[in-house]
Image (cartoon, rainbow, N blue to C red; front, side, top):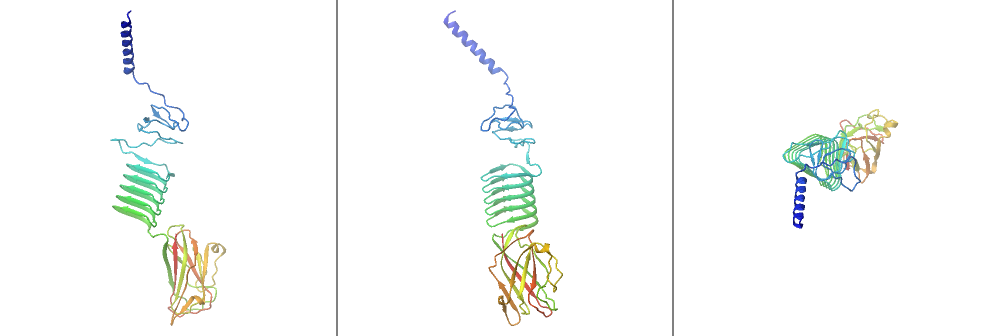
Length: 354
């Protein structure tokens, strides 16, 4: 056989082999049955199961979805969540009851449809979240300093929304909150449609100065030193949010008759029961444990006018934390005093809220 014929025969055989390779059906690679060492990728073609951690550029989930980039499936206990594909059906992201969704500092999240959370959403400083449809949270939404959140449709929260300083929130439709909304200094909130809150909206700056006051008509019977003077009074919203702290900066008393008695102001984080106005102040041992402190007004604190008097004491720095938001107070009179009928005694407490 001539050299030319041998060459031509070899070329023909090569072309035949190549044609067979091209026409052959692709061979499926069996999925990995265990996760590779971290830092590597498994070469997968086929379904993704819960035993695998790393997947390549394209793999199919058991639900018929497609994973387009390497992801981590770590500690998976339920079906893999998938994102909506081009032209595909609407897909929502739903967490299990009691779940916590935490985004670390510098996180950027873009969601094109619905987010449902039963639990807590906590966004760390520098987080950016964009949701193009609906956010429903049963629990707490806590946005840390410098968080940016953009939601293009509806937000429904059953719980508490807490926005820290520097937070920016933009919502283009409806917000419904059953609970409290706390906005602190530097917060920017833009809502382009309706805001419905069943609860409290706190928009004070921090620190925020608040005046708590009450007045009462003293008895005409003789008050003896150590008696309860007036009622035990609940001062609501002493704290900005439930469990928050505050500082009492100053107090002032006004006596319409000018008796100007020595007074002890008793502070408590819970209500307490004593025998009544004009009787010895007698809290029990449990109630005393709830007291935050006491502030005294004595003769030198009073300024006597022609028919009345006013006392004040400043720079007190008395700190307190209450169980809810209310401060409970009582007055003890420390000098024997008798008031005429229809007189008024007024108390003002100036607090700086956390």
